[in-house]
Length: 140
Length: 168
Image (cartoon, rainbow over all chains, first blue to last red; front, top):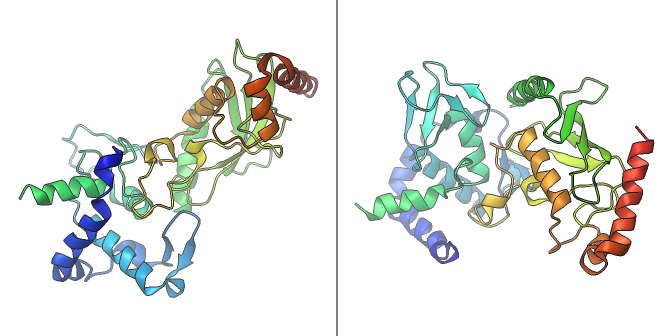
C-alpha cells in the first residue's frame, strides 16, 4: 500500500488547480457544517474556529469540502441493499439523505461528512476516498 | 452532534444490557447516570496471567463521539506494557486518525466511527493477551514482558489479579 500513497498529495493538488472554477462554484452555497459554529479539525488534536485558521489551512479545508461535494448523494428509497448507517447505527428511513462513497459504502450525509473532514477514508473498509476519486478522473 | 452521540450511546447501552457477560466483559453507566461516562469490568482472559482478574475501567466519551474515540482508563491497578501507570490504555484503535496530510496513514489500525463499545472492549481483551511491545506505555512492564515473562512479569500481573479480586 505504501507505494501507492506517495504521489497522491501532489496529484490531488494538481487536480484542484486544474479546475479552480468548478471547486469554487461548488462552494457557492455554504455546506451545512459551515453554517453553525464552524469549528474545524485540521488534524485531530487541533480544534480551531475559523478566525484562528491560517490562509493555507483555510485552503486545505476548502479543498477537502470541494472533494466531499464531488461524492454522489441520494435519498433513501427503501430499495437499496444497505439498510443501516453503521456510524449512527440507525436504520435508514425513506427520504434520508445518503452519501455514496466510491467503495460503494453508504452513510447518512450528516454522519459521513463530519468524519470525512477528519479523515478522508471510508470508515467501513478504510479505502482512501481521494485515491478512488483520482482513479475515476484518470480513467476519463 | 451531542444528540447524535447520546442516541448512539443509549442504543449501545441497551444492547449491552441484553448481554450475559460471556464475551469477557460487562459494561454499563457509572453511577451518576451520565451517558458519556461508562464503567466496565474486563475479565482477565483465560490462559493468560490475567485469568481470574476482574479489572474495573472507565470509558469517557467526547461530545463528538463517534467522530472521536472515547478514552479508556483502568481504575484497577494494572501491570501491562500498553497500560501506563495511571491506568490509561494506549492502543491504536483509541487514537484518532493521524496528523498526516491526507489522514489515512495507518487508518486501518486507528479509530473509525464504526467501532462500537463492544469492539473496543474486544480489542482491549486481545491486547491483554498479546501486548504490543513496540511502544510500551509502561516501560518496566514492557521490559519484564520481553525479558522475564515467567518471572517478574508473571509475579506483578498475578499481584494485580489478586488485588482486583479483593476489591470486588
